[in-house]
Image 1 (cartoon, helix red, strand yellow):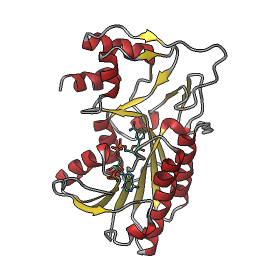
Image 2 (cartoon, helix red, strand yellow):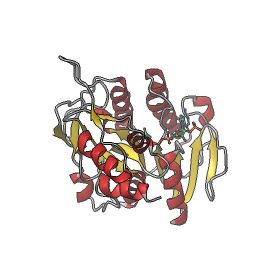
Image 3 (cartoon, protein in one colour):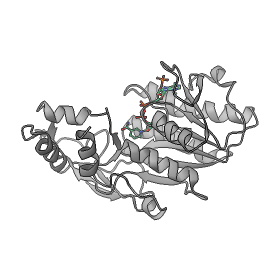
Length: 280
Ligand SMILES: NC(=O)c1ccc[n+]([C@@H]2O[C@H](COP(=O)([O-])OP(=O)(O)OC[C@H]3O[C@@H](n4cnc5c(N)ncnc54)[C@H](OP(=O)(O)O)[C@@H]3O)[C@@H](O)[C@H]2O)c1
């Protein structure tokens, strides 16, 4: 099969390696490749510039959209998620391309819940922060496009070399917020989920891409400090009358739909995933 991975970073490059080893033809797109990925055809293009998207590969079986803005800024989110998806969909249509399915990596940031509620694919999405708002706009465009689409709302992605939280625990600077949940997924499960859905005969239009155990920050940071021998983390001071967290909210994401689709997690919990990261 022939796949285009639009956004070829941490997850995209790892997914490409797996798809190439499965024997597929893989095209990777990003603005600049610093080195040629093995076995992957490359396209250097800016998704926010329609004029860059005139030379896409043809006869694609699926497109996987894994581009991510390099910073936390509404204009960047709009350019990469809203304009980027619109431009890519328009370019495919102009070229007469109708891939069997388009996959879009969204985020659990689309949920505005902030009291630790359980959420799933049917839960309301009323984000207050621009990150969730722009992702929802992009999701809407995918739903309206000519090809079938599947959206995966990933939680916080960690894994090899992406050790920001571990580093902050090690240096003792991390502070937990009491009662605040975090939903995570190891990079190799992001790859596994996408590979699983690419091979699925009739994937659903929406999945939550998180592991099997939402965990509160205190439990997670304590576990990491124990595993690394770092000092126990302290609780962050919460100003009286503080408003709900603007970004990320506070919710527990349920992955039942993904499990029911037949996906078996490599790292079902943060303990499994971070143990692997720490063992590297
Ligand atoms: N990281 C997380 O915790 C998290 C959580 C939930 C969902 N997600 C989603 O998961 C997906 C994969 O994330 P990731 O961690 O693999 O991202 P990443 O490592 O930051 O990679 C993003 C890729 O997008 C490319 N890109 C950015 N702007 C572009 C543009 N205008 N045109 C073309 N390419 C562009 C970047 O390459 P160039 O800079 O060379 O263009 C890079 O290859 C993303 O869709 C992200 O939104 C991530």
